[in-house]
Image (cartoon, rainbow, N blue to C red; front, top):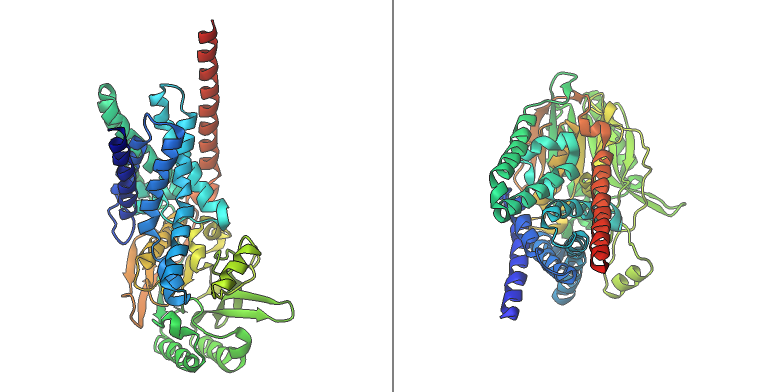
Length: 506
């Protein structure tokens, strides 16, 4: 009987993990996020730390197993690995990140006092968010995929994002889950708890009506180019000229736009190979038409043995941004030399890039400075906040062609939308195969190109100024609050345990 009961909790843990991922794009069942966490918090009730560890790990396998299944496509379809090796590496990747919800379960049960259920309602969301921060910021250069707040961009809780950012909003999601559990388990406090939750969500709806930033100029026309060149064809030498001609022709067809943005590494060659005969004439033509062109290409410095993933502005103002936050196992190899030896033995060759400086001057387009991020960088809010006070909009260039027709492009666009909402700026997002989109300062998609089509997306944006409260303060106030709550729980647990021990001895 006990074995059957354990199996039920194990299956429920996996089921809750799957429900959690269904709250994110492209499924967008946003309200499943607090419900899934409520189920997870329930399976951690009245259990040992080790049991909570296992159930949390099963939750992680369900969540990441569905949510980052696209890793297989990248390794197999474009990395050239066999199905067995690709499946094994994907399972290892999923299994590694599943450790983090397991850690939440272990710590939450470990620190809650004996028969202290009421206090555990606070411990669960506090520990959940601290571990999300650990995963999203610190481990392997950060992996913020499937973080709670991203699921809430189209719910009233989105109103909190310009105020307390993703981690603060994620805490409210987890607190909602804990509140739902408390409503079920504490009938005498049910109506008070329901009122509290409704007030929190109602306040979020009100906050959505506030405009934290203001326009500083007239709307300008922009065009985003989506070449739809598959990853297995992109770097073939025989395709280079056709690729450049397509982007040049699409650019020339949109000289009426003030800004034209090409996707990540849309130029499949180093700067030194194309600068004289292609980029300089294109930049001169852009200046004549009073247009700014934003292109992306790799830059190599053979003397210093350095290679950068970069964005370059062409036209009246020409300058370069070098990617600062590199992708682990994609653009650099952590855990060297072990990771390098393993990947070499598997026959996988990855690009090894050099980090750009964190204090690079902002690029300019149409006379306005803007924040630049390349691909995965848009998952990190600190990069969008850096020099934001002087930036009028955001530009992100991405190549999600590595992940084929999977759920990854939809998830990545959802993450990018968060940056627009946190900063109160328009976001121009140009991608190779999709999802190319223009996002307004409220995080809403104004216009989006269809995936896997060679096309151009044209619309108008307004340069913005001013800072949201979150842009002013950053994540520190939320992190400090979470740490204070966590330490309070630890100290109260120690004090409670000491009192129980002294009482039993007497």
